[in-house]
Image (cartoon, rainbow, N blue to C red):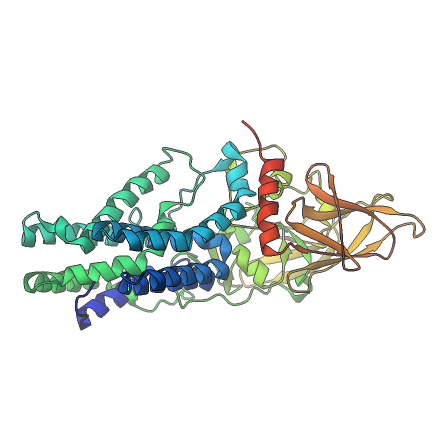
Length: 497
């Protein structure tokens, strides 16, 4: 850790970061990873100053956690594992203890946060992750595997099997073995674990991995020369990956995962009339022209559509203010999963299950528009949108009205809240408002700034008896109340097997 930094160290570090950071480069995950890594490394610098190291880990944990609490495990578990392993190898018990104490409050908050999610409460209904889309991972990256093998051979050659006395390399070696084992378990589904994939740990450790790799490659004269030769060979082999790509030349799509971190989507703009509307996505259909431009027909998020100049990732819909039936959440709610999966089929933990236009609770969703890649009979066509290689059709959604139920007009233009304006078919009578929001104790309903209690309609939906003209505001509870409510969701809605 005290080795002098040279041009070659920096060259290897930035060259490999350039190559690896090509998928999940959104700031909501990369920024907290960077923040926590920085504070971990600074705390190591002051590891013998107990209170200062405690403050540094606490501040790094606090900052990383509150940037995006839902990603705390992904962004921080790897770097914290590195710090613990480093402390053990250095036999610095006090530094280890102070670091764990500083980190522990955020671990406890994270546990309460995630308890009330489908991942932890629905057991065998949730499929374990087996993702191959992250390039920076020991189990997926041939280049990273090649580097590790070269380092092992290089150290054996130079140190004659005593290389494990080098703490930096020993840490790297331990992570390599552990993440390779866990990666194999996940990749081949040997055990169905509903915890984050080991590739996330690799991803959060990328800066530490590359720092140790660059130092280990050049830490004496013999290894310095071997390291330079190896790096030059690697760059020659991988040079095409660094060259600019023009995906628009004779190419209708390119996979979402094969982009560099500076390549951004344009804002999704199918049509302005879809903004702030509740949309049913009736695609892809196998008989449409549109389906020809999908590299992955089951997960439309994996595609970049040249005609749209964007991908169809769930976040693209969100950023365009299209409120679609296609959704994703790292911590998908229990009833969000169950309400859209009435048959209780085994599904992935992150994606809202796709339901048909015959879905039992379709009217509750209060849909405005159907976006389809084929023509549909029985629906009023709003507009046909012609792109260069395919067409999309906008249809008015059909909502069956029950006189006993309220009509809900929705305003989604406000930040972090949804406003419902209540109307009745018969203005003199009360009505039952069934909200298109899966039931969760984490939701807060207010009328005239007063919190109101909701009923649990058909197990899955919030409902209230209201009068014509009332206005209901829905938001999430404040953070600490949210944590307690998440635990309550787990207790009330988990499935027992």
